[in-house]
Amino acid sequence: MAAKGNRRQGNAAPAGKRRLFGTDGIRGVANVHPMTSEMAIQVGRAAAYLFRQSARPGHRHHQILIGKDTRLSGYMIENALSSGIVSMGVDALLVGPMPTPGIAFLTSSMRADAGIVISASHNPFQDNGIKFFSRDGFKLPDDLEIQMEELIFGDGLDGHRPTATQLGKAYKIEDSRGRYIVFLKNTFPKTLTLDGMTIALDCANGAAFRVAPAVLEELGAEVIHLGVEPDGENINRDCGSLHPEVVSAAVLKHGADLGIALDGDADRAIFVDEKGALVDGDAIMAICGLELMREGALAKNTVVATVMSNLGLERSIREAGGKMIRSQVGDRYVVEEMVRGGYNFGGEQSGHLIFLDHNTTGDGMISALQLLAIMQKRQRPLSELAGVLTRVPQILLNARVRERLDLHGIPRIDEAMRQVEQELGDAGRLLVRYSGTEPVVRVMIEGEDEAMIRRMAEDLVDCITAGVGTGEPATDGLKRKVVR
Image 1 (cartoon, helix red, strand yellow):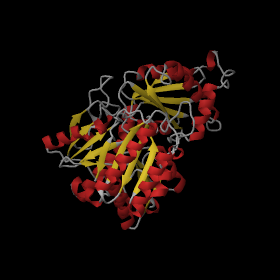
Image 2 (cartoon, rainbow, N blue to C red):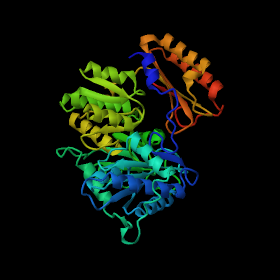
Image 3 (tube, helix red, strand yellow):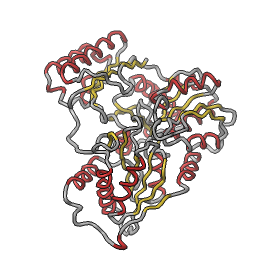
Image 4 (cartoon, rainbow, N blue to C red):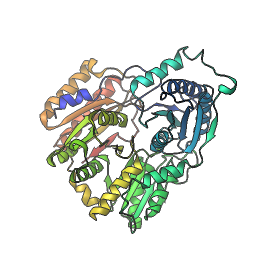
């Protein structure tokens, strides 16, 4: 795949102007605009109005589910959202701490008009976010988010304030966790168990701290519990998918068969093998994609990944007779491409894996269960299974920026990117894009010569930093990452 084409896919230009929504809902520091109680009330009102208007024909009883992770600020935002929703004549169904994919499942299975997740995923506890699922369990398309923003900042809701018996109610759904646990277990082959397996599980002190251990233990595994004591402030702190070294150490200490590290809202998972080595989303996509092909269960023999996935994954799938197509970064865009093309499996290097035959969004526990099923069926350790992926060296660096300018419009930066492309030729890839959630430019270069691409990436980051950077370190985990 040509390097130049991949640069254009990387969105080096800033995203379209939005006032609230990013690539995965609304996100920010809790109690600071836009993540305030006042804004959450308005978001709740706009969502209730919008989803009520788009409800199924003849649907009279309107409900929106609200779930959250374990952040302290979740109580504040949950109550504000609920207030806005019921003020528009829609019931709010409160499910408490629940993984993001659990809300997607419950929204669809309970025939609700929409689902809302209060979470900032892998961000530190002081941040929080709001993201939505439509009634069929899929994340909202851009046009619906734009409509919601127009309602929030316009006057379209002023004439819609129901009173008396037309107001909604708020209910707690007591059995939501049990419903999701049963659903997850049913995605695991009924002919298999996890008897005899030892699994180190890190729940990041997040939304899956009760659900994930229960699922694995009920299927027969011995589980080493990590990150299952949330206190409102320790979500993602030195644990979970951002710190796989924790679960790696536990695997080695206890002689476990593998380790599973979830993020704060459990929509993605990172794995370590029995030797403590990291196994990321690209490797899991190779393992699961090839297994699905062998079983004749991979729709159109196609895996959907993003522009961030390693060239080695594309080669592995192609050599087995399949193909891989790429979307822009973000699991919602992977899902949109899957739905548009009629595909059933895809994901991201970061660990968001989507098995559309089971759920409508990335689900860390479904990913784990599908991988565990392959390990049990083939009776092979994860380290051996992961050998199907031969990586091309890949350097990922970040540059923190003052503002999101069009990098192609800055001559010095544009010329630097062109020089990298020319030097790489057809033997590598350059991807430069803005983060969807942070003021950061991400630079990714792939090529056979690791020393060369490291030099290229560092020079390009220095150029970007000089042009639009703040001079501050980008500390979100990708600053100087090398994938071999």
